[in-house]
Length: 157
Ligand SMILES: [Zn+2]
Image (cartoon, rainbow, N blue to C red; front, side, top):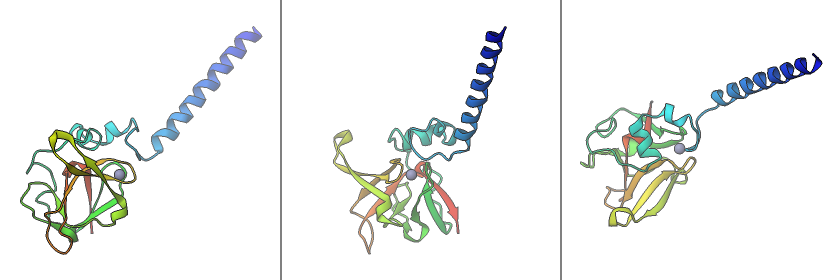
């Protein structure tokens, strides 16, 4: 009889403990690519871009022709990455910026996929794929940060 009570108590504790653990996890913000909740936060296309390093089709994303004033943030970890101030129409069909809001928040990685040598850009904090950087941008930097709309969210000023 005593043993039965002990088993029930142990089970009860286990249930309470696992429930608590669950609550704590779900209240945390999604911060990195390994977080299982990221699949709920992002659309399948966004997930393919941010985690799978995919590219959205040109002229299909939500920001290539977007002209509001504000800040573009990382779709995964919400780091502020680009400003509408440096956004320009590159004609490529992807949101293009001639500078990052803060260069230390955008990491550049050599990318030799698809038989091309390109520089991939990722969010420094969470490593989410953003797009590529090219040196055919306008003055004053001469750079073109070519970013997938799916990698970004927008905060209106
Ligand atoms: Zn990020």
